[in-house]
Image (cartoon, rainbow, N blue to C red; front, top):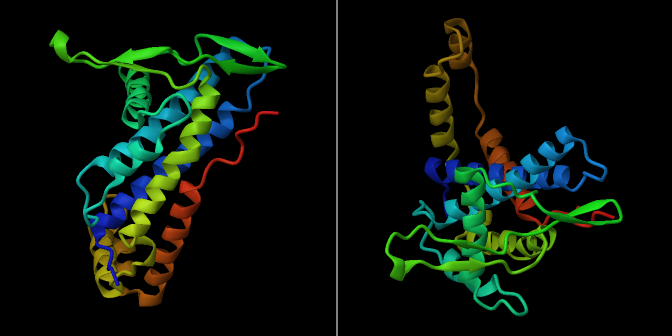
Length: 239
């Protein structure tokens, strides 16, 4: 059975945070209705932007070299991130990546255009983004795979979390255990090196008993939170 290292656990905690934050942002984004005040419009822009920022932070984390066993996340993502009329999964992914980049690096306003369905603002997706190549021969254009941002989000939700889950599951993450004694040592070291705990609190912590089963339980809880974070958002219907 796989034993999770501290480095791997840190990566999984980051992944859980990004995927949880993307759900929080989406729930908030879908709560807005017309008419919108200026402040409400700004808040809506922040939340839709945060959805893509967190989602792409998670996928880019999965694409980096990690302490997990060799994996095929990128290959599997491209194979599954395809939709009727848009069969190039890599191009579809590059579109949402450059959408995120435009939001983060160029202040792109994802709420700049919309139609209204009832009282729900259906944001219109940017038709395309270009890469940043300086060589004209290497410039590529990545086109949207749906007219509306909500539909793009729905398609992202239908694929991305599942690919991440399958990749981690195939790597044995959800069956993995930890070394409780190593975890205890790491915890004691972190407490003693804390820059916020006063010395008297450090002394109390050093004298306290830390039971191995606590760390086994925390590892199981971490995996449960990760499973929940990877599940599709259940608030996609704005009706």
